[in-house]
Length: 79
Image (cartoon, rainbow, N blue to C red):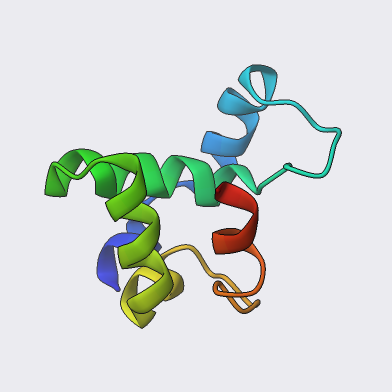
């Protein structure tokens, strides 16, 4: 939880916004995308396992400051 507070999420959004689209049904918050990529790299997981872990792990969900049900929104759209 300390790491979530140390990361400058606003700066990441500003820096990464140009690399991500802002239209369409598949749009995800940049904090979520950057955070998933970070966790994927440090845990050496493939994409599918990263999403599965995120759906099950409340600490990871807190890391992204998510306030929605991962099973209903992200998991269904990623596949």
